Amino acid sequence: METAKREMTFLLANVERRILHTIAAALPVRIRPNHLSGVGVVGAVGAGAAYALSAIDVRWLWAASLMLIVNWFGDSLDGTLARVRGIERPRYGFYLDHIIDAFNTAAVGVGIGLSPFVEIELALALVVVYLMLSVNVYLESSVFRVFKMAYGKIGPTEGRILLILGNGALVGASAWGVARTSWGGWVTNGAASALCAAMLVVLTIRVGKNLHRLAILEPQGPPGSSRRTTVISS
Image (cartoon, rainbow, N blue to C red; front, side, top):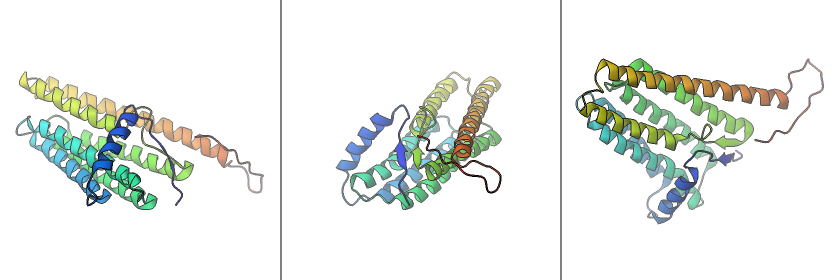
């Protein structure tokens, strides 16, 4: 499998790259990339559980934020460690990243749906749309040989930061007795609905652009017609 070119276009890409390389270079040899993948899964499951437990005590949202950081640490550092040590396996990492990303997204999304702040149906819709975006990224890397880890300037790192900021806002709102009122529920569910709609719009635009590129690369003419191949820069 030819390795796809990686494009790190999200806002914090350069900062994250430097931090991860520094940490990876300092890790003991006995720690392997798969160990860090496991840490990422633990973080996602822990975050989902903490979201669910926030139905009992809103302060569990602080634990959810901490576990999101653990998820970032494991999910982002495993590939960096493999590259730093020169042991990266493109096909293995490609497959493992896809499977783990789907599981982690589901774990966090279900936890959010079990919290008192977002309706379960809406949380599951967010999971489905996010997974559609993720699948599109992996398909693009297979078809166009470019692995874009973000949509515009927003990537997984920015997504986690937004969740953490949202957790802090909900804890603050709960201290004022607002978060669990009907008004508070309208705000949180409205924000989740707007996010879901925005992701669908972004996905639709990206898919349309991809189909347009493919129509040029592989013209759909009548049988026997000459086919023209055009090189399109990514």
